[in-house]
Image 1 (cartoon, rainbow, N blue to C red):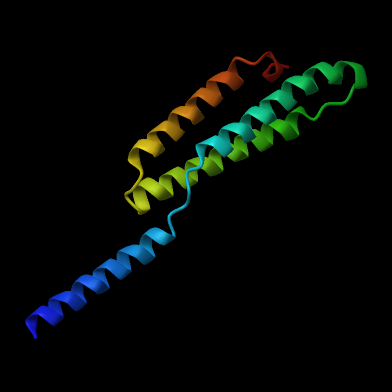
Image 2 (image 1 turned 120 degrees about the horizontal axis):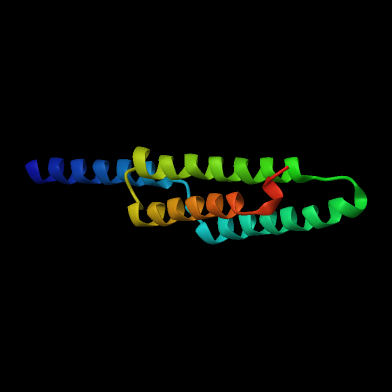
Length: 112
């Protein structure tokens, strides 16, 4: 009887862990890297074409980039703090966010 109770407790605990980790957001760095890189390319292209067209989408592109990075930080926080998993992947994702911000700060299109 004691063995069945212990087995039931183990199964219950395993089921709870499985249910909890099923809700962990996916840290798909490859997809996020492509998304941000495409937006940065669009930003550079916009800087060149805005001189000719006298119209720029710079603010919208910057807003989309920053929104993408900030929402990504929320996902990273959720994975690490709330679910306590994927620490190495989260670290790599944080380095990517920092690098993306450095790349944006060095881009001449951010000035005036």
